[in-house]
Length: 416
Image (cartoon, rainbow, N blue to C red):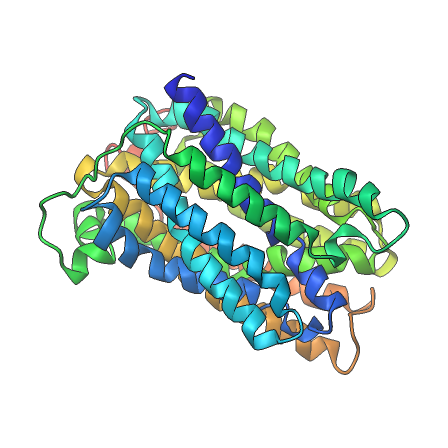
């Protein structure tokens, strides 16, 4: 198997593992008496993302080959996930096990990215074509839940209400853990360097990368992830309230559009440049939530579907463009630190704040009921729509790197 094929398979499994549980766990918890606690998996997930840079800085960047650390973490995570359904009757233990699992998983996002970047020459041209297999993995996970596990249950509960997606995650994580040891050797880039708190949390990388445009990018990334958290937690519940039974398959429409836009990203980089791409991504999040709010009272499926299909623009133009922008500004010595810092800011601090804010807003609107009515959902969705719009304006006004001032087509970050 070629290096590119191995990296593509790694991305496929990396996001299959995440997609199998992340968009179904709230439905599972709601069906097992934990309907007011569904924001907690989306809280422990970013807590783990905050811890991830410490692990990357202490271990992955200095002492062990990246592929070996990736393999060990996925094996450990798989074994923990097998235990999660056993704690369903004890919410505190259930959430604690999910925290332990995420402490294993979240560092692997930065590891997978830095491993891939280490073995390619052109970030803009090659990385999207490798990363797209991660999106395909997420799609396959979602479709498998509804169209493979669903028929196994017959006329019983929908798969998302059972522990089958959790067990699917556990099994896939073990498979990826074993596969990781066959990935190309990637030596620790920081071997022999002095260990310090600054380097572990990415402050050394920030000092190297930092300029005003980069600080604006980081601030906007953190702020945008606050409203983003509402999508991952509550869309699955919203779809159920709207009468949609194939929840995972419906949400997979977003990843299907993501594949298309991922493949088109090299062209968009030439046409738009990094600033316009990030702005389009931010605008898509605003539009998505507005469509959900408009669709909710009458459960208008085509508006919901368009909102989900926008995921290709929402995710690729924001997250993937951001990863490439950071890597273009990095040197090999701080590549892992820089990617870890971005994970801390976005999947960590931003998503942590967002999960708690969204959960508390949802519970306040919920009152004593077990779920929101369709007439109540617009009051929920309009808030992240407005927040995302404000972040878009902030970024558009303040993000002015020299490379972007003269037009699109230059490599992101080269002149910064």
